[in-house]
Amino acid sequence: MTFHFRYRQGFLPAFPRLEGKLIKHHLFPQAQEFRKWFTDSGIDVHAWTMAIPEQVHLRVHRGANGGLWNTAWRQFMNANFGLRVPREEMMRKAFDLAYRFDIVGPIVPYGHQVVSPGPQLFAD
Image 1 (spheres, helix red, strand yellow):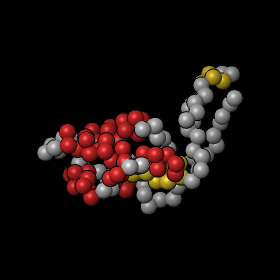
Image 2 (cartoon, rainbow, N blue to C red):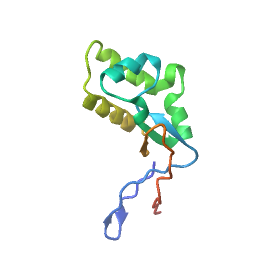
Image 3 (tube, rainbow, N blue to C red):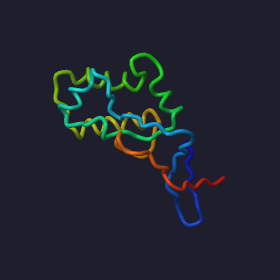
Image 4 (tube, one colour):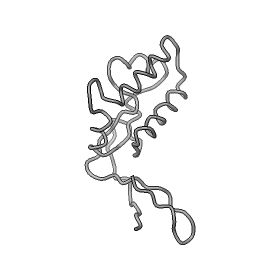
């Protein structure tokens, strides 16, 4: 990820470098084991996908049973076994994991087309 903060009159916002084919990554895993748990908390897993580069998607899901991304959600689910986790807490966890796994991109519902994030400014 590339961040550029200095400019003539202040700061530029940080723009991620979204290179290559973009894939819709479910912030809330769609695996069967999670479905009822997310639904009970008012989460529609297909409403919350993030457009990320394909190689990043492969990195977070590399390994058995959905890779490290699903493992992190499984650990959170097991830590809250038998509890109804509020929707707001689920959302916080999703974005906490996005930060932890260093993924960033526009939020796009699964059924919608991924559009280019627009012009990106990079200074050397």
